Length: 75
Image (cartoon, rainbow, N blue to C red; front, side, top):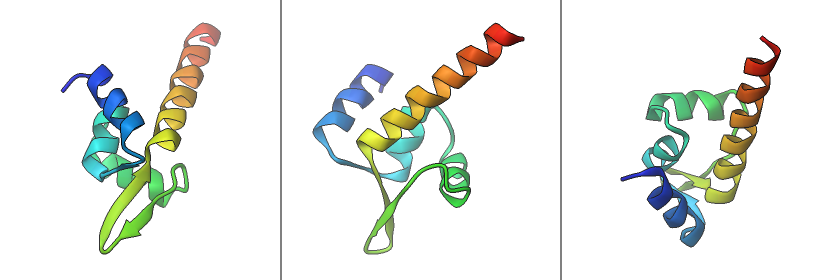
């Protein structure tokens, strides 16, 4: 799946699985777990499964890209 498709799916669906969040962010599932443990992203449980708010993940991604771009310019 490409990024555009994932973003379209994210906007239709309010919740993402760990794998969907990882694909949207371009990271591993383990890194998503690291982010939630560090308090960088919020989650909730559906039964025993982690779920992430699609809008919050998209916002985190945008903020991260902005920070990355700024660090390249200042380097």
